[in-house]
Image (cartoon, rainbow, N blue to C red; front, side, top):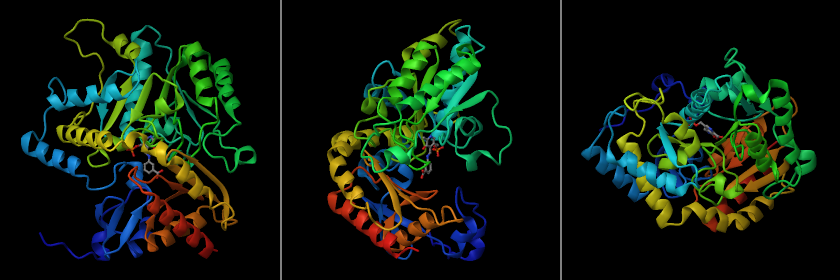
Length: 441
Ligand code: PXG
């Protein structure tokens, strides 16, 4: 198939997501290939992937097991109806996933993205209380600076102002905990900050305000990613869990970013030793190869629905593509790859080298904080006065020119490389960022 030449005309039709469209189309950045740790650009350059795509290609690119599983599956069973019918790989995948997750998170509901996983979990939480006769528990509590995808439930419990302010009144009955970012106390911290567990006590305040009998669930990212990597203070998640348990409120961890090895354990649930009632995932579940998400659900939540006449549908929710055969094949190939290569714990082994490399940027131009956990890093820059986000965006453009893909959010550089990264790549990433920062106004 011949490739059409790109002209400004045919760039115009695609309204790109979360992109400065006009800026991009003046000088497009196009990837045409990927292998291992590197993307290949349309102009033939290799670009080191410092972000695992968008936090999803945890095993790196073009991994043979995944490619072959997808190719085989398309030829064998391209699609099977998801409602009132099944296919074996969905059951196999759910069983393998639930074996990876600590008990009682033993049930898996498939979706097609992180946003859909979030909507699914929020609906499960509200419906759970209703099937148990506590139908007044409808209130949802999120957190400032939280990112839970872009659908109405997710932006309602989310706390990123730009993602909310254009879209009206959102869901009613939602409140927010404060975020935990506090540079005055916690700048330059490696791993979890010592101070800030007390931010969890705000949940008590919200319970006193609304009464526990109206609250269905609390949703948080164990490590907030999109907002610029906010790492939970020591004791904070434990305290949230204890308060939720005490008041009959479900706790939802949004592990769309932290799931599948990012922190050095299969899930943040393992890493922090805190087990919520529901866990949302996506991204790394298929290594980003085919869209898929999954909600892990605790047995006590699942059992509450499994009552009434057996011919009736227990949960009126699902997607045409829930458990899509090709996505399941990609996920099974991905789990094989993670397991064979020890990738779900590799971030723990590389963590100290990663931390030292990142923190060597302390003192580099414009840097006001560095933080890290697992194979996640953030470099916070001093914003240009009156022009927030501009300095970090310039860093992104220059790093790309210099052969390194980074993500920026606000004036924060966020790093989340594939878990197959080698020490030499870490050096390349950090050295390039240092040079880029030096060259910036
Ligand atoms: N929850 C969390 C915690 C996420 O990070 C979503 C839900 C939504 O997932 P979908 O698959 O619907 O996009 C996310 C997505 C970034 C970045 O660079 C982060 C996400 C997506 C794109 C970019 O920070 N997170």
